Image (cartoon, one colour):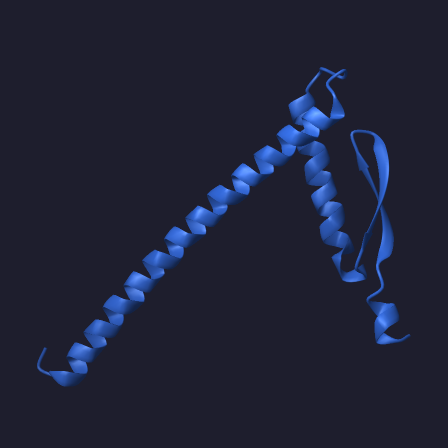
Length: 105
């Protein structure tokens, strides 16, 4: 099999709110796509709740907004952790510099 054939998109069937969709993805991304589809289906079902008449586009929009909100919160938390780690590394580097210039400390 050629490299081009190995990376050619494959069709993957997913189910969202009992509707089937076919989505193309790279073979090595199939598991992640199926996991994402399952998460989206679950989120949309929880938003829709028992109201089976809720418009799918509204439910999809609310699910997307929920996921984006969660993603942004994770990004902010990651940024804070990176800043804290940089501060710790800087403090340790300063202490190491002090020890190298004044071994009596």
